[in-house]
Structure formats: C-alpha cells, structure tokens
Amino acid sequence: MIWTPSPNIGERTLPISMLVLHYTGMKSGASAIDWLANPQSKVSAHYVVDEDGQIVHMVREEQRAQHAGLSYWRGITDNNSASIGIEIVNPGHEWGYRPFPEEQMAALVPLVAEIVRTYSIEPRNVVGHSDVAPARKQDPGELFDWERLAKLGLAVPRPTKNLVDPGWSDAAFLLALERYGYG
Image (cartoon, rainbow, N blue to C red):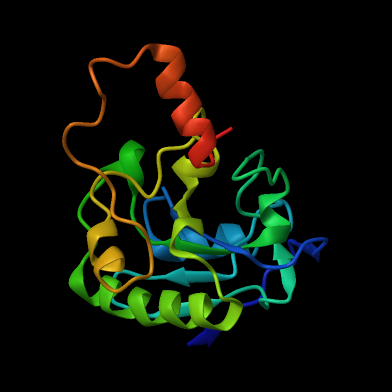
C-alpha cells in the first residue's frame, strides 16, 4: 500500500456505517490520484485501487474524505461523514468503460472485507456511488462484480432479472426504493 495524502479532508460528524465504491472516471490511474491529491479539486477518497491491484491510501479512515458529494442513503445526507470511500481505477462511461481486471478485484476484496469487519458495516450499506447519488452518478457501473462481494457476505446481491413487478404502480415501486434506502 502506498501512502499519497490528499489535502481534501475534514472532520467526521457521524460514525462510520457505510462503504461507498466508485470508479475514477479518468483516463488513467495516475491522473486520478493526481486529481484526488490536488487541493484545487476539493475531492478525495480514502483509497484508490489501481488496475494492477496496487492500493493507494490517500485519507486516514478517521478523517472525512470528499467523495460522495450531494448524496443520500438510509436517512443520511452527509454520506462523506458516515462512509469510507474507495475509488476503483476505471475510465468510466465517458472514457471507455471496461470490466474490472482480476488483479484489481483480488486487491479490492480484502480491503472491503477489512473495512466491513473493522466498522461492522452491514452488507446493505456497502453501496455504489450510483446508489447514494442516482440522479447524477452511475459508478461503479454495470460491469462491477457485486456478485463476488455478495457471495462473501460483503454486499447484497444486485437483482438482474424480474426487476419490476408488472402489478406495481410507479408510486409503489418508488416507495419500495425509498424503504430500502434511496432518497
């Protein structure tokens, strides 16, 4: 693990109860790390997992990283204070979104497991940026291997078929999403 500190930090006002996974959405891992370490960006993450499995630690877990932005999950509106943020190097939908390499996933899984164990984070609170900010974010995206995390008890499985009950009204579907945790 490489320590590359980001100046874009703050104090936590909530206990850690969430883990938010992102993709970097930049052309390279190096450019993402440079951006997260730049005070002008005003963004940061606790960890960055590169495609070759290298982990860069950028913000100490006891500090608040600036990774979730305007977001909501299960009644929490300050997700940065309540979460650990992990950026996973991937160019994202804008720069050629692609599957996450095995080396990267093999490094990510133990990191997620350690964070979940340390903070007793429930699998339903291991979420993507797209879960906490669905109107503006789509990461880590449809190619991310949520099933791998779910099989290890680190996240909940993502449904892949029969996503909508044809008997439900739009209002009932939206209510179900809200009851699960979406804003």
